Image (cartoon, rainbow, N blue to C red):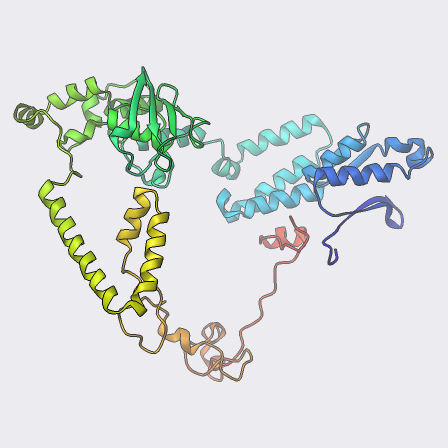
Length: 466
């Protein structure tokens, strides 16, 4: 309302002269506690003659919008009063609901669905309301949008997608985590399905994990959600868990498929990977994984030649020694350069030492080493300051020509793409138009529910709209 950001609530009643105020509340916020305190102060001003002799019991009926804070405060201050919703605000909220893109209501169906809801809202009897509701459910426009009409098909599609490893919908899901960076020696088996995982940040701290119920003592796992500690145990000990997408578990994927479509005769081989890979079954229990792996002749031959499982990420000792030798030569070269030019290199080296001492996690150190030298700006500047990595924001060739001239104003130069109205006009009328002609001004949508429904357009919002 003013510089102090106060809120004003008017208590109005109707008469032949229009709306007449019976109270005014000025609050500092719209919370339930503040509005309740304001209503208690308002009740202290009422006498026994207020509201036709009801006094501090308040009026018989309150009409509000769907504000939970207001309705909760009124119910607390005036428990003997009846709270009803304003019909206009109900229709306004539903019209905005129809226009939200996430609800996927066809534009041609909005007016019809809105008309049916309006008829149900103004029904005189309960029997008429039930009849209108049943007629609305039978309407083809409502059936094509009704969110619960395809509920069974929706969940069936979700389960079958996971069973068939179609993971487009879950690529960003927390149930599809990244590869675990927790070492195997940091995982201790206590008993049964209970494990202890050492924290990566604090070696003196450990987390207790129960794989049978999918719980962990960390912040993310205490509510039963997936966490990196559970995933590390799942990968290292080849267990199964419903907290993660069963990409490499044919038995779990078969169960999801049967849950979606019912009992069927699809064999378990249908859900196995086409690649003969020993790592393909690592999310299965150990005994079941060995049984599945032994069915492949190639894996049987590998078992006959070696008893340990190869690790793709394991480097040989010769490769590690070569990388460390190259790194040592770079360190020696850096020391020689610092001794040669200490004025320029000594201060940055002190900053490097301080930043290196602050890194306590292996993943952070790996990220810092991988990003070293990528934002040096080694390429020469060509007139303009580049972005990180010597990148520039690309624009269309005509974008620069459409910018405003140096003299200011809304008028554009003659260069560039012609304006929209020059394309829309006929050839004869367009002959005298240039790109400097201002386009027609677009007015915002009116804040009028009847007009917006008639034109089938979105309802305009004001600064007071919630």
